[in-house]
Structures are given as C-alpha cells and as structure tokens.
Image (cartoon, rainbow, N blue to C red; front, top):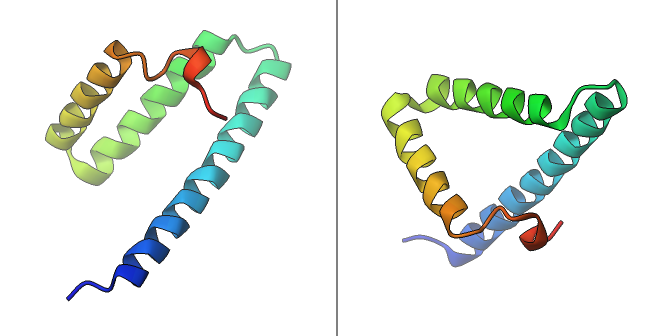
Length: 86
C-alpha cells in the first residue's frame, strides 16, 4: 500500500529541487548574458544540453515522446512570457 504522506513528501522534495534548479539556471543565464552571450544562443545550448542528457538517461524514444508533449504545451501557450509565474 502506498503511504499518502510519503507521496506528499516526495512531491514537496521534488518541487524544492525544481525551484533550486530554476535558480541555478537563472544564475547561469544571467552570467552568460553579462558575458555577452545572446539569449538565443543560451537557449539553444540549454535545450541541446538537456536533450543530450535526457537521451543518455532515458533513451531516444522517451525523449521524442517528451518533445512531442512539449510541442503540444508550446502550441497551447504554456511557455508564453506573460504566463511565466516565476
């Protein structure tokens, strides 16, 4: 039987890790911008690095499915700057 308290705790830990990762990415992004690297270069490099790591961890099929999901979310406006809650 799954303990709901453990599931809730795991979700809280994951949310905290995501927040810390978001802060790390923002700091790296700001450092790159201050060094004169254009935002589109930073973005493309971040996506390429992430996809390479995800393929290494999960294989191409799962990453293709993830990219398809991201495409749908993008088409529905999830990544528009005015929707950014951070």
